[in-house]
Picture 1 (cartoon, rainbow, N blue to C red):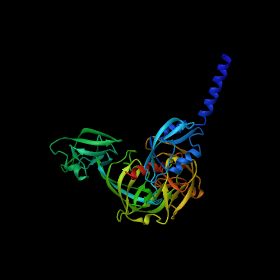
Picture 2: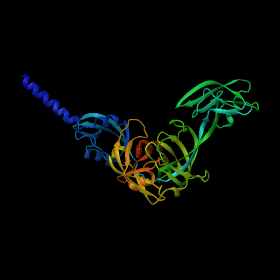
Picture 3: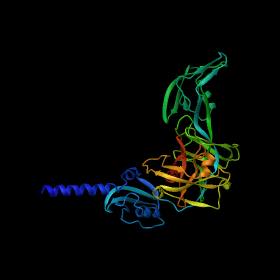
Picture 4: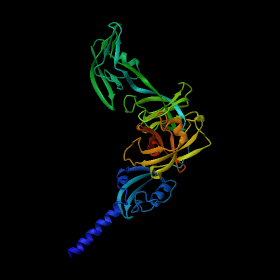
Length: 400
């Protein structure tokens, strides 16, 4: 009897080992509770055994039925086709076309509040530098003495001339703080906080796509930040502009390269409405920035596979597709601009830029005829490698 039990136990352990080695447990745990997908991608998940040959994706009714009017469904990952492991809501990707981006753009945004760019103030009368002891570079002042700061003029208007300090509300690393800060009286008798500030941010990025139906665009793939930290900046509005690429600083190990572009902040080609963790979004008013003869559809993360893909970019002067290899695809249960890791394989791009450089953020990634994501970051240790964000996260924002 003991021998029989021992044999049964060994069989059970061996069977379990086989099953566990054929199940992508980590992928299942990473899968968010809601994802974008379509019928073809779901069918391919099961055909490719994406999560292991013992796992199948089933609808709550055990079968996915094509319905053009259906916007969402409940899907369940099942072991052996009947043991539920993970439940997710499927939001069906609209069958709509988008123009592919890839072109560098200039951008300017006006912030909610004033961004500190220097915490030193020169006192000409005393011939010395006065350093503010509380506020730091990158902080965003949103209120002074309980008055909202809408532009730079508000800073002086709301400082109490009869008080030696001011109550300042500011944002640091995404957290709101309030404190009383001593004011400084300059040689003209004006009270100051002892900082240099600005209320706008300019930069370079890359357009990802423009939706054909309403000219809504997505770009950058990651947020516009204050430059001193990775914290998202709250904006009032902004604009994008066509820009001219003047040179490329190639990336090297430990030294990120960059696109050097110039643009004149007039004759805007689009309006920025949102700055989010997914990138920037708004409406295009000049379609000369894209090839209107070529459209793609957006793909969901279930359609992404490790292997060959392409980056679309205009950095050579014309629109070109460069070969890359997706070497890791995370499934992410929360938003992140590091959904995928890829390696540049195309010698043309490596010769031109060294790989991924600053300014290429937002460059669309194409796989199996769909835009599946956008470039976001470069590996400092290896410029031939980069991160990308799924189209899912971008589609989520543009549909809000």
